[in-house]
Length: 235
Ligand code: FES
Image (cartoon, rainbow, N blue to C red; front, top):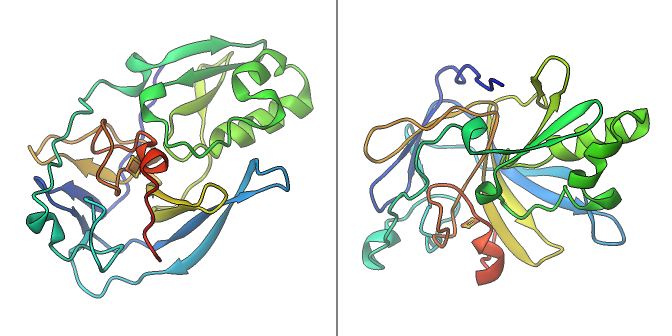
């Protein structure tokens, strides 16, 4: 199984040591809200307000404490933010658990979970994969897996071992989760290249979520801790 993609042209994100994310390039920055059903199940992404960058490069808060979110205001210095990166560089497919259904595969790297919960409706994708020879389940499975913002979950065509990814133009989403009353990570879409503070690039993926609450134990990636600490950005 191979899962490689070309990096988005002209856009880069650099993790600054114990500081913000430095963003270079012309990339849309906007709210992305988790829309839910009446039963509070994650159903769709709702794009919202844009935050045009007024300078290049621009810096996005990583510690969770800026008073000028989503941008950095240097508060990380006064709070002595420890932004040590702990995620490592194991490629996604090497880290993933694989679940096999009749038509499709599901790969899962649990440590990347951003707690967006698109996996849960309709009996959960880990069970749905077993019924992917049913066309209706097949389509719904691809939709739910593709909505996972972190790319923790990936659907694959079983016969060709090809990942089925949503078409995402390069953009940075600022996730809001009103049904849980919290704010979530930055959602990097469309293969934006991320380089660690040590200068080593992370694997380029179509969907990535970066921690902006400061609490992830898997920095720079989100691990869902924003929900347990009740992170709110006030945007
Ligand atoms: S934003 Fe999700 S763990 Fe920090």
